[in-house]
Amino acid sequence: MDNLLDTHSLLWYMEGDSSLSAKAKSLIEKDNSVNYVSIVSIWEISIKISLGKLQAKTPFSSFAYYISYNGFQILPVSFQDALVVSSLPFHHKDPFDRMLIAQAINNNLRIITKDNMFANYSVSLIW
Image 1 (cartoon, helix red, strand yellow):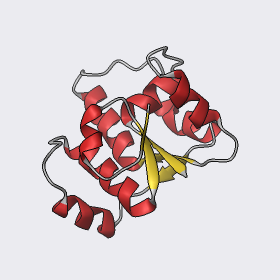
Image 2 (cartoon, rainbow, N blue to C red; image 1 turned 180 degrees about the vertical axis):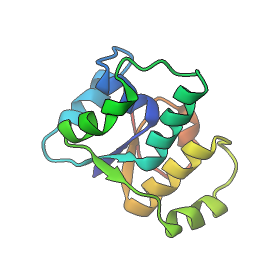
Image 3 (cartoon, rainbow, N blue to C red; image 1 turned 45 degrees about the vertical axis):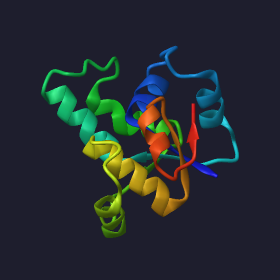
Image 4 (cartoon, rainbow, N blue to C red; image 1 turned 60 degrees about the horizontal axis):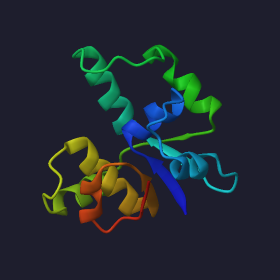
């Protein structure tokens, strides 16, 4: 099964932050799986930086390079993803996380996240 990195997992991996669990790091670096970064996470990061709520060590202008360098694939949002979001129960209120959940469901991906709220949905989680 391939992986979808939650926004914090992406940031922690790119910045070598010890907050990323050893299990998550190992799965990200495993050779036989594909790691996806949702365009939703890129959008979330850009919003948080512009609002002054996020100080990333890596300049935002370099994110595309680091995503490519690490072999991550960008996952676009589809109409089908939006349909799934429209039917998700409101266990999790964050719109970015709800879209990640929908994308994981649609694309049969496990989510690498520390967020316990994701467990309220029918998705595979790794931490």
